[in-house]
Length: 182
Image 1 (spheres, helix red, strand yellow):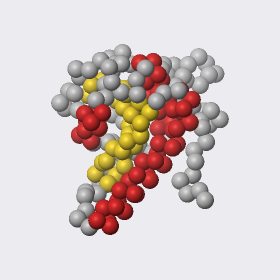
Image 2 (cartoon, helix red, strand yellow):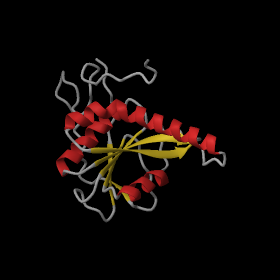
Image 3 (cartoon, one colour):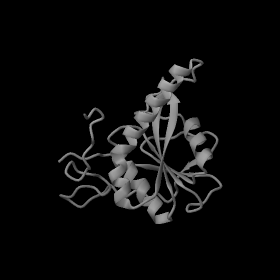
Image 4 (cartoon, one colour):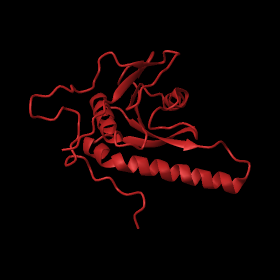
């Protein structure tokens, strides 16, 4: 029985209280996205707020050539839609309202390992998010994004013979659509 052993991290935005604004979830296109989306959907459902689903997509800078710029925008949009489509069944099952967004990150950034905190903060400021849920550790030296003191993460200690809470077995995980289906 294979499980996704990742612990979603929740960060509170300094000066904002839960329930006063949307929850932001950062998806990176990895298997951990399933559990992160479930945790974020649960948090949004409990607080009764909108869920902003941001897909981290590597991108080059703007282009002077209009055709290259248009092609770049289509590529970014299609990658963002593909990442969010994987977790859509989880979001619908939780019954939360969500909005898809793109989190542009520099091309050299490996989103499986880290996402630039400045990119996350720009999306937080754009939507007025009060909490950020991600599988990655965010190092915010300014102190705006603070690890949640009341850890909404489910306990990873499970009774003998049972799977830890907050993990999805291979049978429970929703089918992941292939990005190249015809």
